[in-house]
Each structure stands twice: as C-alpha cells, then as structure tokens.
Length: 487
Image (tube, helix red, strand yellow):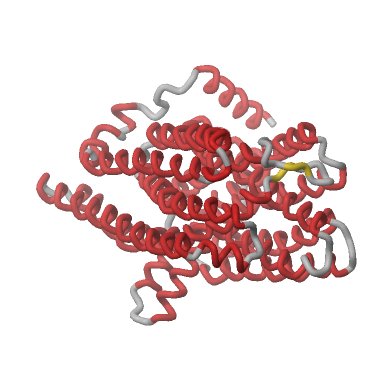
C-alpha cells in the first residue's frame, strides 16, 4: 500500500544521518511496533516493579499481557490480512472513501474470534475471574491495534504513527508502575497497561482518519465487503492464521510440558524458556527494519519499473532485463541483511553468559538464548521470503510454507523436550532453518517464473479468481454476505 512507503523513500534518499535513522526507526515501528512495545514495556516494568511487588504478582501480570498479545496476534491475523488486501485494492482503484469503513468493519470483525479464543483459554485453564476479564480486555484492545497498524501502511504521517507507540509506551509504564507502588495486584497492573495500549490505539486510529477524512458508509456494507474479501482470499486468511500460530506454538508446547507451571491466576507459563526466547527475538528487529526499508525503496522502484516496461509495451528482452534487475536487487539485499543479522546473532551467542548473568537469569538458559539467536536469523529469512510470496500473490505457496513452519515448530519443540534440557530452543532453530530454506527456494522460483506468472499464471481471466476453494466455505461466505446485505 502506498503512503508510508512514500515517506520512507523520501527520508531514505536524503543524504543526512538523521533522515536515514528516522527512516530505519519508523520502519522498525511498522515492522514490529506492538512487539517492541511489549518487550520494552515488560522489561522496564519488571526491572522497576520487581523491587516493589512480589514476583508472583509480577509473573501474573506478565502472563496476562503475553497471552493477550499471543491470542490477539493469531486470531486477528486472518481479518487483518484480508483488510490489508482490500485497502490495497481500494487505493489502486482510487476509492479512498472506502478506507474508513473498512477500518471500522475490521475492528468489529476481529473481535468475535479473539473473544472465542480467550473464552477457550479461560475454560481450559480455569483462569480466575478477575484475570479472565483483564485478559479479555487486553486481548481485544491489542487485536484492534494489530488491525490499526495494518491500515497505517496507507498513512503518510510516519511521525504520528511512531509517536502513538511512544506515547502509549510511556503511559503504560507510568500507569503500571504507579499501580504496583499502590500495592495493587496483577489484574490491576494489567488494566493500567491497557491504559497505555488505549493511547496507542486511538493515536493510530486518528492517523488513519486524518489521512482519509471521507465519511464512512454503513457498517454492514463494510462488513459485507470484508466477508466478500474473506471469500476471495481464503488462502491468505488460513496462511496468516497458521503462520502466526507458528510463532507461538513452541511456547505453548513448553507451557503444557513438565517445564510449565501454573500461576495463581490459572495461566500457564514456562519462565526459563519464555524469558530467554523473548530476549533472543530482539535480534530480529534491526533486520526487519532494514527489510521493510529495502522493500519500500529499491524493491518498490524496480517493481514499478518492471510493470511499467510491460505497460509501455516493452520488448521481451526489455521485460526480462527489468525482471532480472528486480530479482537481483531483492535477493542480494536479502542475503546482505541476513549476513548482518548473522553477525549480530554471533555476538549474542559469544556473549550469552554475560547477558544471562547481567539479567539475573539461570545458567541453564544460556543454550536456549544461543539457539534462539540462531533461530532468529532464519526466522527473518522465512518472514522476508513469505512477504515476497505475498507481494506476487503466491497464495497457495504462502499457505503451504506457513503450515510447514507451524508443524515443524510444534513437532521439533516436542522432540527437544524429550531429548532434554540441553536441546531446549533447538527445535525452534531447526524449524526456522528448514522453513526458511523452503520459503527462500519458493521465492527464487517465483522470480525465475515471474514473466509467466505476470502474463498467464496469475491472470484472473485465465486461471480464475477462486481457485480450488472448498464448496462449503463458498456457500457459508455467500450466506453471510446475503444476511449482512438484508440487515
């Protein structure tokens, strides 16, 4: 989607250190804003509140927030990716008046699956009522933030988007620490954290509304459009669901294992595995920022050149040269960013004992940190290659590779548990390595066959738009759209 990409390209082309840093920083927010929000806020709150409140209270608060982010990410992902595609279509068709309605419709559509997932968690783990209500509130709000952030890809106010996260982070930290100082329990701390999330949510929503001031249509019309988009993009929905579940499935395996323990509020966690893997995940953030910046600058320019060559009736040799430039730039930058990330991971691996000691963690967590840092390198490759597959509308392959990652991460996490403590984290590393190799190979083949895909393979007039979707899903979506239309 055009918008922030224009601003990133403008910043990146200015020959000043401040503009390059601003572009990189904003790209990091777009790539991993909620993720960074959670990790830095929880780390700061934990560091300060640990001296004030009991460790059990702090662990209960952390568990509520972590479950909220995990549940909302997985369950809101299908609606978010469909809404993103619909907004991209609306901007391509020069219908900016549709954006507000799609945003509000996506907010409404994202809430039921999140609530159902929270209800299932609460019932299965027998979570105490206060924590259950706090978990539901936090999960719903974070789900809305995921949706809003996706729409912010079409917003030109990059500074406003970044400040929304910074402001929310500040409010969350101040409010949560204040509640801890007052001697209140983990549920109250979670609600204080939600106050900061609320600031971020309204900040992001206001940025979208400011960019698209046109009044929205009827909510039911927007919901009908989303239902229609879900019908057309079923593979995208399922792929995003499986891919985001894959990010968390190894944690869930450890929560349910002998390494897991039950908190007073009923939630399960695995402290040794969770804390170390969250630290290791920070390694990937600079690479994601560089990739988003590369995607929105050099890649986008060459992408436009390729399709402009086709639109201007270029010769086959000219089209092929444009394709090769696009392929060469993308794969070379992917390798370059990966090598830089590998260097950062090597530093983490070599200094793992120092990091573990400085954070007051256990010696047994050193191996987990090392495997996590290694896995982050290949997880980045997997994410980047999956993004390229989506960019060229390779939905079936995108779905296949997300399912592969989910299965590998779950299965190999179980294997690592059975092998023993020294292999904890190795399952995540191996899953990322295999999934990244498959996704990268699919990306290479996509570039090799790009001319065929552009003219024939992805041409709706030849292959159709529906593909081989299941008939019962088609009928279900059709009934949903008719009921929304009648309403």
